[in-house]
Length: 95
Image (cartoon, rainbow, N blue to C red):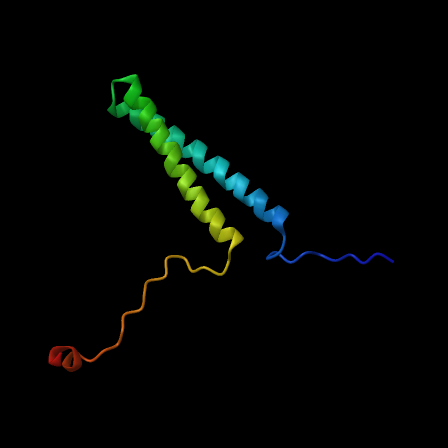
């Protein structure tokens, strides 16, 4: 009696949350490690090394946040450039 209905990918919130958590965790960890490695090579002070790690974590979190917002809201374009008005040059020169 019970029908086997599959949820379309656009409405499957569990899959979207899983993808976002996986993406966020990987990006924060990898960018923190990159910041730690860069801080180890470039800086001598422990404070600046920790700042490099924090900066890397922030970059990873920001990148993951923007990609997760695209995953949850498929309607927005990915950096669509604004359209320029098509005015003739003679009309602009006469004003």
